[in-house]
Image 1 (tube, one colour):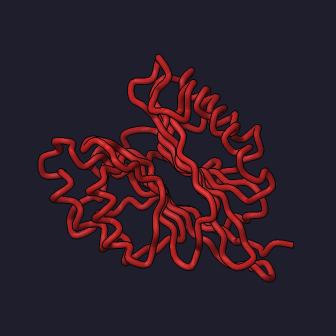
Image 2 (cartoon, one colour):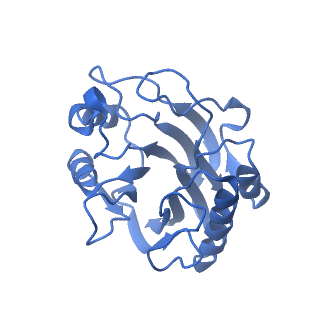
Length: 254
């Protein structure tokens, strides 16, 4: 380990929104998997997507040594948030919520976007370390994804550009896409690199699609390990997406 560094673990997970009619895989049946998942893995930061408020409330009871940002209040019952859970004693010094649209500060969406997509950004501190965490969920059309990526890069100008940064999310596209390449050209890295594999499985435990759930990073963070968690817990999968995990060495500030 690098001298004066500490390990930091980051997870991204699309929860599959809790109001979906998923039969035996509905939220009320599968939420029991989360205590077992987080008993096994206790990341420093967790970016979740498609979070209904009642899902966030439940996870907050499971993650009782965490705080979170990204919840819209008040919000309609169907509303899906991009929540960042962060482990104490990390402290959030600044947070922003944006819509991925031409008017990011009011509820809106790009004309070609199927749903109103969002982005949550937090600036976190712990002793002599600072970290920016971006959590987002992109729409399906390639042109909309490119616009969304450009917006996030622009949003980061509201924060200190030299601060170590991680981006988690469901990007609905793979590392072969122009969207991924835009982030890489902008200085972000990916621990998975040539180890990409399916992160969506549709509650089957099989590989049904590409690597669409990413953890990107830049700055002084040094990659240690990465994994896709493919196992079920108490006989059921937590979501139709696999949790994705990255572990870093985090050097102290100069």
